[in-house]
Amino acid sequence: PDEEFQRVNRGISEVLQFGSAKDETDTQLGIPVAMTEFNARKIVVFGATGVRLDHLLANLFLPLDT
Image 1 (cartoon, helix red, strand yellow):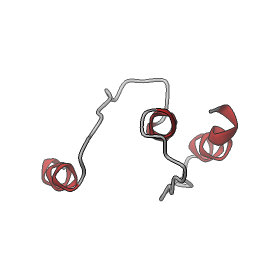
Image 2: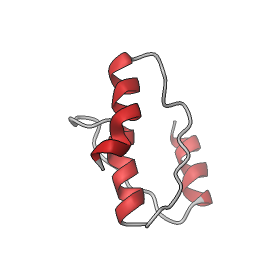
Image 3: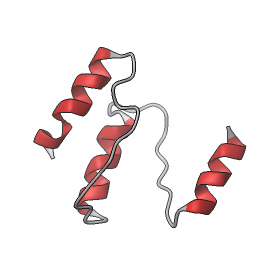
Image 4: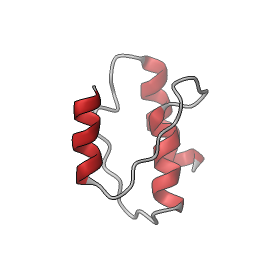
């Protein structure tokens, strides 16, 4: 919801937005950005297991691809 987005936007310095029609999951987009553009040395992902097996597997193998 817009209210929740505004709350998040106030709490962090930069928000990147991507369209909903894409071939990558949000995590597949976010992890490489965190690693390359923000030089993140540690990334904590919450809710990565979800209910979709394809998203779970993509999240588990994502560090191998980056």
